[in-house]
Amino acid sequence: MLEINVAQLLKKPTGTRRSYEIEGSLDIIGQGNKSHITGEVDFIRTGYSILVDGEIHTSVKIACSRCLETYDCALDFKFEEDFFPTIDITTGLRLPPSDDPDSFTIDEHNVINLSEAIRQYSIMSLPIKPLCHENCAGIPCNC
Ligand SMILES: [Zn+2]
Image (tube, rainbow, N blue to C red; front, side, top):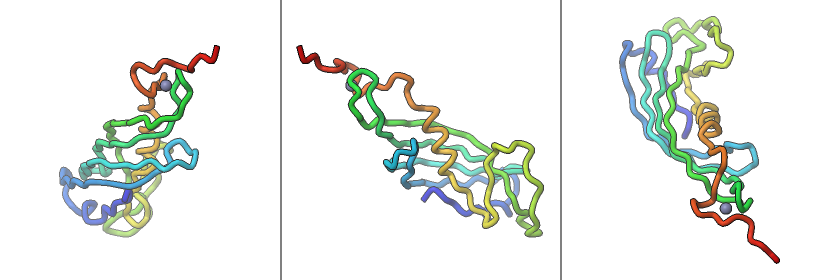
């Protein structure tokens, strides 16, 4: 599951930390291939958000830049993002939106969905020149 309910954590004092092991699947590059995601995430209650500190392991099917064959490219990366509440946990009232429209939010059911953050960071960690293996010889010559 890449969705975690943080209602209890939102009621805890600033500095409270919770650790989770996550596992799920996600279409990272939007081609219908689901990548298997595993990782460890720490959720830290800050004064105004839940700070998510994660270490993620996954792989995506991409084309090798030399031989053009599709292969599983392993991705391992860390990320750190603030998730902002949209509902006040004590009053149940809607909070004003954050100043940054691209910031991640906690939904009205107090659930953090990590999918979009993992997708964005996966794409950022893709190699510029992907290689199926270090010594890929390139496209075989047919002459
Ligand atoms: Zn190759």
